[in-house]
Amino acid sequence: SDRSMPTKRDCGSATAIAIRLSPEAQPSSSTRQHSGSGGCRPNSLAIVPSRFDGWGAVTNEALGVGTPVIVSEEAGSHKLILNGFNGSVVNAHKPDQIAREIEKWLAKGREQSIDNGAIRKHAEEHFSPEVGAAYFMECLLSLNGDDIKPRAPWLTGSEATATQSYLA
Image 1 (spheres, one colour):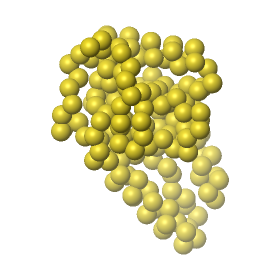
Image 2 (cartoon, one colour):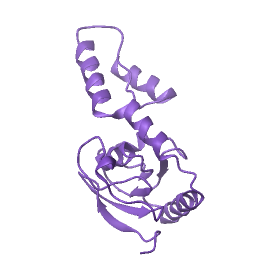
Image 3 (spheres, one colour):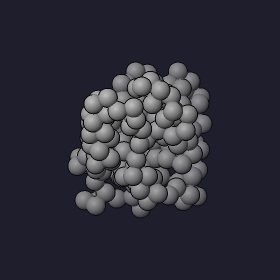
């Protein structure tokens, strides 16, 4: 089949649009994301064009196997995206913008310039289940009146500072 042909793919907890970026991309048991469910695989592109989505766990699941994600700013999971590295954040109400980002990522796939291993490693270090559990424990422990509030491991720079101020 045409490698740029979009299909709906079940990536565990939600259905996203997936595009194969490489004809060599084949499902395997070693490409299971850290949630344990199957479907997303490296060398694909997940597109989550939600106009309303509280979080969008499919973003976590795709990134967990090294799949870049185009996600709308309406999904809370857009906070996981480092534009250009592991995906893109788009406005769900601007189809032309979404189309441009799809074209950009298709070009990256043709050039083989997507580092799926680096995307997967970043996910493991910043928002794997283990990292999330440790952060949750830090949040619970901080309820004892500590002045130091935990930093969400997936936030960077000013977002982390703003979140810590909010929690204080």
